[in-house]
Every structure is written in C-alpha cells, then in structure tokens.
Image (cartoon, rainbow, N blue to C red; front, top):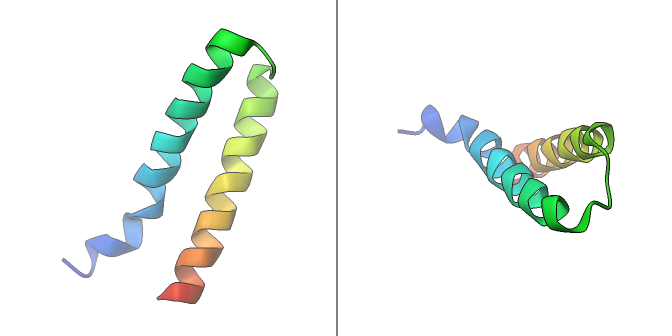
Length: 54
C-alpha cells in the first residue's frame, strides 16, 4: 500500500482538472491551452507539496 501512495497526487490533479473543466465549460473564461497550463502548474505544486510532506 505504501508503494501506491506515491501516485496519489495524480488522481487528485485529474479530479481538480475535471472540476476546472466543468467550471470553465459554463463560464468560458479560459482556452484549452490555458487550462492545460494551469493543470500542469497544479500537478507540479501538488508533487512538490507531496515530496516535502513525505
């Protein structure tokens, strides 16, 4: 189980990206490229927090 905990930031980022996509689908504030950019930024931040925490 402890080996699988390393991959936890990936599903969290995917969930956040999906929620961001649903939010943006109604508002149309961001383009697809901007959404991908912010999703990658979120993934990097979550990975850094995860590495510091564990």
